[in-house]
Structure formats: C-alpha cells, structure tokens
Length: 320
Image (cartoon, rainbow, N blue to C red):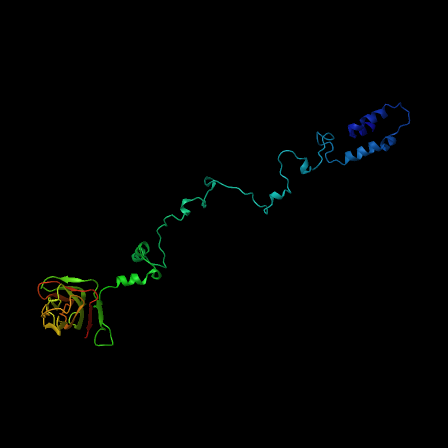
C-alpha cells in the first residue's frame, strides 16, 4: 500500500516519503500518519484533480498556464487587439500615389486634358441641332479692331462723316423737301470766257424732281471793266432749265442775263468794284430721269479774271 501511494505522489515529495520509509521498523509511523501529512495530502488532491493523470508523457513535468502580457512588455512589432488604429473611425494618414499606382479610372491633377487650353471633343446634343451658321458666328470677329463704343463717339466724328446731301429719300407731310443751304469754302477763279464750275456751289438732284435754286454770289474781278457771266450746268437732258441773274454795274444800275439751257445767260458789262461784288441768280429746274449733280458755273465777261469768293451761298428746295 505504501508503494502505491509513493508512485502516485509527485517527485517533489518522494524525498519526504523516502525519509519516512527509512525509519526503523517498529518506530510507530503508520499509514494514517503518512496520509495526515499536509504536504502529501495537498499533492494527492492536486494530482487526482488533473484530467491528464497518467495519460500524458509530460504529466507532472510541463504544465501550461494561461497568462497575458501588457503592451508595454512587448518588444518589436505586435498587434494589440484594442489598438484604436484598428477601428473604422480612424482618420487615414495623408499620403500620395503616383499615377502609375492607380488602377481603373482616376483623375490626375496634372492631367493636360484638364487645362483651359484643351480643345473640346466633338459632340452633339439633342437640345440644340447642329447649325453651321451658329458655328460661323461664334468663331468670327464681331467687330473690327478699331470699333468704338457708342459712348466714345464724338459729335465732331459724326459730323465729319455726314457730308454731302441726302437725295435718296423723301419726307411725308409736305409737297417737297425743306430748303437746303450750301456755303462755299475757299475761292475759285476763272481767267477765260468759258464757263467753269464754281466749286462748292452744287448739289445732287433726284431724277424727275423739280427744284427752286437760288445763289448769292460774292465775286471779284481783276479790273472793274471786266464783268461776270453766270449760268448753271447739270446732267444731260433735263426736264427744263429757266434762269435769270443780275449784278451791279460800275456806274449805276444793274446788268445781267438769263437763259433756258445749261451754260447760257448773258453777261454784265462791268463791275461795281474789283472786290465784294454781289450777283444774284434764280433758277427753276427739273432734273432728268437719272438725276445728277447740278452746279453753278461762271466765266469772265471779257479778257481778265473773275473770282467766286469764299462765303457765297447756294440755296435749293425740292418742290415735288
């Protein structure tokens, strides 16, 4: 019985039991005393509570005890189950990827296709049908490079463009046009007896229209004995021409002439003075079908020079 007990007791207690066995026979140590030993009893209790009893070659040698370590006890790299960085709520660290790292579709911020200079791809839309006129308008210049805003245009610039007479329109509410006055700028001389234009004393007639024409001619002569001739010229085959004129003479009275055709009208025999003489011309005129320019003409009455002076006035009115 003693041997059986000793076999089942862990080795740490064998020495104690061996001491008891070496006690002389008859010393009075009984089995009950052995079992009553607290160390032996404790070992026996633990031994028989082990499910690995006698079934594991390492029985009573290596006992694995479940244990834990605090994170601070770990050296090197380890994953801690309660690491806050393992949760979904963690803010990702800022990082970048090269375009070559990206698979699938991505927008690269330095992609040349994102610049303003990129030519749009050709496309069409159902809400606006293709229209070549629209494209032509979009790509064409909308104003010349020298264009001005309306607010920048001056009165002088407008007046510089609005020269000459407007004859291509009529005004309602009357039987004809309002009178128009033309003032001659500069002098025009004629040293011959052949009719020539008095530059600046002219207008453009409308075909088939009738006009009342008046002229106040300021003129000068090389000598007072040389008079002036006055008439009118215009487009071929007028409806009619009827004119009369007169001028002051050297001594007293007036002299002049008249006519019923272009470049016809008689002459004054002399001049009141060599400068600032006045001649007055009245004409009733109907323009040919094509219309055209009507001009006052003049010439010297005899050998000498006559001059139509700056400030002479032409007045005309279309009456139908």
